[in-house]
Length: 227
Image 1: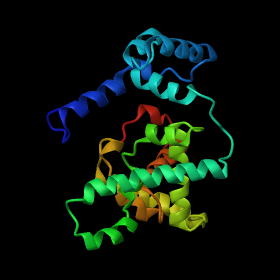
Image 2: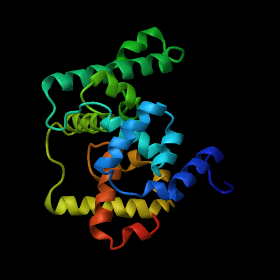
Image 3: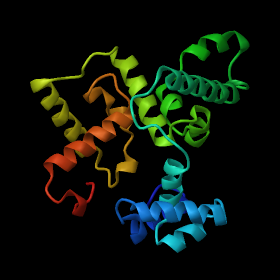
Image 4: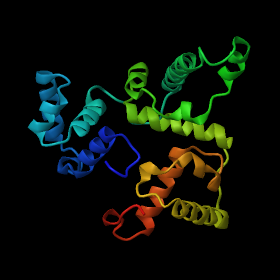
């Protein structure tokens, strides 16, 4: 971990994830999904044991089970589902703000701060499994994607982002800014700082946009380093 400005434990987990061959086995087959359900009935949330039995990583089996553990909708979100998601998000964010601000802001300032929430609180480090349980009919990744879409629509006021030459220029600006950062890994980048290259968007959107550019424009991108 010497020379890397991160706690050794995070470096260890990151390296283990990167070099674990069980993380790169593609989609789950129907048979694997049935096995996963069967093993979960036998061993509960002992993902380490289940991962060994299925030759998949701990994270992979846990995430896949989250998707298939119950009847989940895959079509358009209903109005009721969206309302449940909004209610769950409101509760999570209010609870977080209450904990963070209880000892840091005067009482007179709390009502104003209650309305003005920065983007980090709205989209980072959220308890998605808890939110998934509140919604009930969608798994956590769907909830996260839907919430990002809702935020994006509010931030852009429903208008489409740059088109034509402006869109091309925004891509060039993004690549230039990333090059100037000289980051060795995507996780080292503060994507929120790059939002001005595209418009009123979230850092997660900028990161996804860069990934799309890389996949579509860089030959053999999987074999190349981030820098």
